[in-house]
Image 1 (tube, protein in one colour):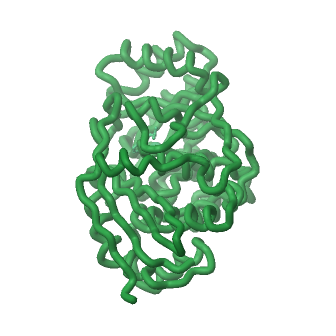
Image 2: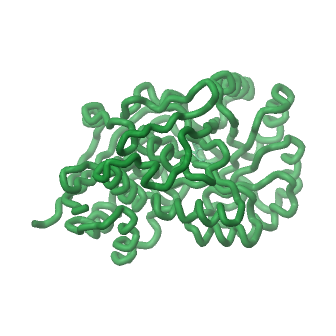
Length: 373
Ligand code: OSB
Ligand code: MG
């Protein structure tokens, strides 16, 4: 695959409903989309960084900058055997971190490779499933009543797991209300690092709710203290933010810092690293599931492909386009069956067509970098 040019676009898309986590509320997304132009084939990738450096240190503008200055130049004009070779070129360019920016490029190359080989992306990744199970992540609301109404709607739609966002003041009180209404639903919660080890007693209070997991209760960069906390809790800890590489996953397994891991392809630097984490977890019998970052259809279709790998045995935060957008930028939009499943397409590439006209209209900045001839 000869990389002839790379196009960056920023698109603006308002969310159907705001999304609030322990670090803040998002009303509208500023999404960085990438297109890699290789031998007449275009591969698409989405950078999942947020509008602010709150979930991680990356954000839309840091990604734009590191891609245009460092990452794109390290790829332009190169002839790659496969998309997976791109990690080595980023390492050669000596760029540390900036995993979401790297992932956007690497994943666009996987998309191009799949199209070039005429293979479904999920097969190229080594997937095994013909459909995937879906859960929903529901943000902090203005009132508990509103949250209950939302859960009601998602359960009626067929979703197989409900995860709510928690923070001090919006946790035990809320879980109590949910459990008194629905004693048996598969329920989990995500703290996005809202607690500290001083709150072990409080966190032990979560044990009474029979949760599938509590996601990232402590610091975003911590594994060690999660292993201390896990010993104190009956509820399984799931790590999100702190699993940035397959080594981090191995450390988490060896220190028993969690019993479940959430894989976000952007957080870990791309499909190659995501596959490695999947394998590390598989060999250590740690189930994984695919996390979400309020993606547009481009990133969503990549999450779907990744979720077909064998050890993605728990429902992911991969849900229907309509939960986020009035109109998505792919055709067909991502649809979830009444049984809470997404059917996997057998077409080459992702199986979803990119609506380029719509993207053009949503674009607020665009830049194309070309290989010097
Ligand atoms: O921690 O999983 C998270 C969204 C933004 C940042 C962090 C997270 C989330 C979600 C949303 O939970 C999942 C989704 O895309 O529906
Ligand atoms: Mg999370």
